[in-house]
Length: 348
Image (tube, rainbow, N blue to C red; front, side, top):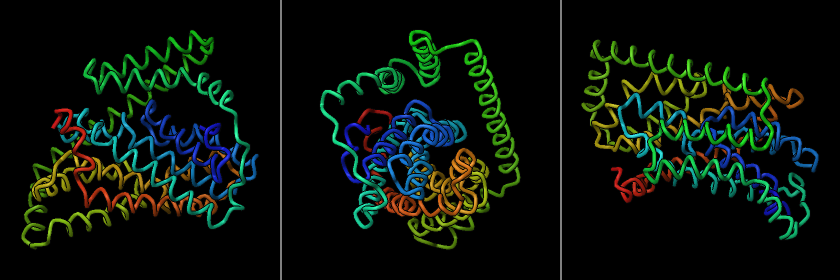
């Protein structure tokens, strides 16, 4: 991405945001996206004289794209826990994911326009160099096309896409001679631990949801709020404030899992679409991943670059927080932005 945008002011940050979106499309994890880009993009930006705060803020914020750009682990969790279509949710997140990239790029453009010293200009690459670099990216592009294309075309299910994606990645690693015995065993270990943790979350959330339902508390909460007679949009706005506060204090996935038994029936009772709410829920949760005092992506980046103070990183994410808030408002006011694609393709 840098060979296409590096000659523009802030071009390396544009490239980082684009790379985060692309990596999110084959990874599905915000933390993994942020960690990977911290190793790849951060040294490149610092070497070229980019401000530490803006460079770090772009990576921490860009990492959240791994959650909203489908396929996403959090979307799968939401779909399983609410018994909705995973593919419909993936499709509904396409436009919000693209909006996230656009809003981030606009935020970066405004910041570097006001203070050009934050992001020096790079050289303009020739089209020959651009073609060569694009050709070197064929493996990542192929993996993204196979996984996403297979899901949306109906060639295989989400579970089958996961196995196909893993198989293609394995074949690519063998073909490119990148696979060693230690790397293979490490990948198996990471897969087993991640899968086990996801099942623990699902099992725990299911047990919690069952007992919450038995207690009658979710139904009582819904009835109480409905009796207040508040406009539905005001209720959604209050829920957004609630999630922003909760996301700054709790782990974001835990915040979603613990509140679903209470919030989900309330939102559906107000007449909102469950797929639309899934997108909104995930957008506000990803915002919690970069807001203080507990922004998990910020702490991941700080852990990988110990010379970057937490205050510097949090200062760098401020423009991206405003971009996320603006995107959240747009998606709430215009639900068709999320729902038109799954409706057009017959999944709603």
